[in-house]
Image (tube, rainbow, N blue to C red):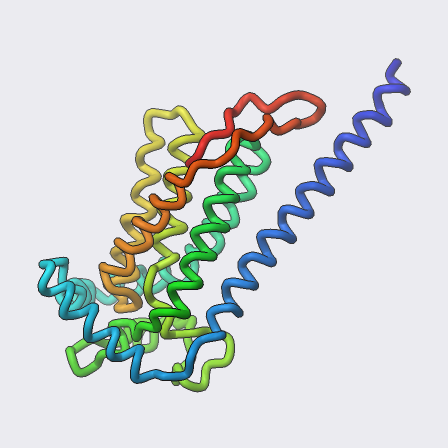
Length: 257
């Protein structure tokens, strides 16, 4: 009996590992398409600065929080601004990847909805980045902003945005730092039952503060990302069959995150 069970168990494990590997490759491809797709932008830097002026004036008209005031508050402490720089530069991708891996392995019933939401949100954000180039606040030195990453580190961007070949520094709207952080928080809140699960909302809150305080994004970029994520989540989808795991059906329901 044991001899019969071993090949079946080995086959199941091999299937899961193969499927997991394909998911990793698929998500890696998504990130690569997003990163390199943002480079397919029109070269008109003037438009990016014109859009920045429009966003800045709209925010003042709408009485949104002032990014310059927030940055000055962060600059009151060297450790605070360096923490914000580090959170912006080093938490974004690792946290998102860890979330996707955990959801796939531990909450497979939720994973298809999470994957779909991330793909659609990222794809739509890419379209907006290409259609609406936007210079981030850190480039508006005339208003008093400084590039905190360049001054205090760590810095993920090159010195000259016009000569950076791998990063489109004019893709500020919407902020996928905030969009993905909100998806991570929403997914973990939906997929867990702990009374402390609402603390996951601290991640998008801290991300929003970090991206605006470091002058990498406007508050409107963060709001746009949240609205985009909400729209994607509200799009109806066909019911999906439960995901099979190790020969049994996953207990987690497939619901939109």
